[in-house]
Length: 293
Image (cartoon, rainbow, N blue to C red; front, side, top):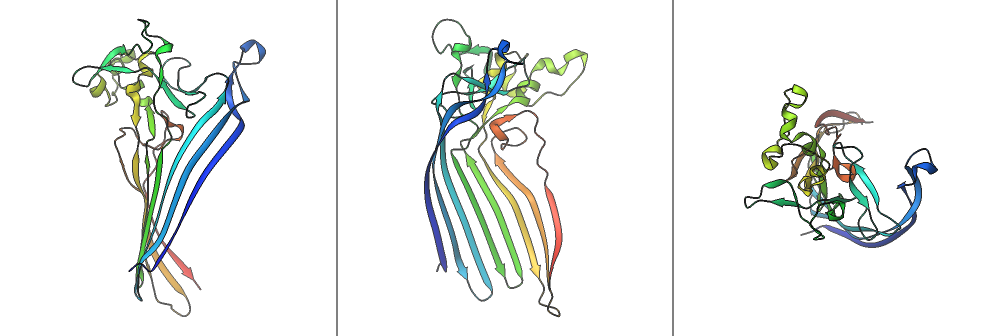
């Protein structure tokens, strides 16, 4: 029998005007070709659901569960011209993302890769999306974005007499990542570049690419599903009975416990969705004691 149950549902629609973004300008009008300017409007809409429950509560045992899920969609509703975003390490001045009216902010703007019958990408071969018998920037298309469509959190805790345990988890579905490390390091030429023997990124076994250039670097092959499930924290504690009005609680916790994802980079959760200079999150163990008197 459920001892306690609480929940809430929230819907929101937020419109933001005069957003500040890095805008391309005539270099003869300033000290560079980009300045920050108020150039666009954006709309965020979504739905949030929260549930808090205590399924079991007895004299010696209690179990609590917290669950939340949110659905979110953001769209640029006004922007006079495309604004390239998301610089990558291959080529000079290459960008793999764009702010575009009618699209999600930081959407990936890439070429559509052509694959052979075995599902292996054909190097330098892309879909002529506008059917003009040439491959150029006009053939780029919007391919996903770095923001999750569905975000979930699940936390649970239990206590039995003097023992307590808690687990914190979360998940994101529908977020994508541009694997800049694979694009830059997963080509055959890098194995002996400058007559220096170097390791290749494992994606070379998937692509077989021999060289990287401005066009190949912008292949949608490198835009990968980065949906994930993470166990952020597990903690275990034991509380001693009061000793002369003093309570001692001994505990241990583990941070960054587990990540389940199909993304083959270091981490599927990188701000704005470009994996190129990310320092991996550490896994840490903590032992401690709390004293209350």
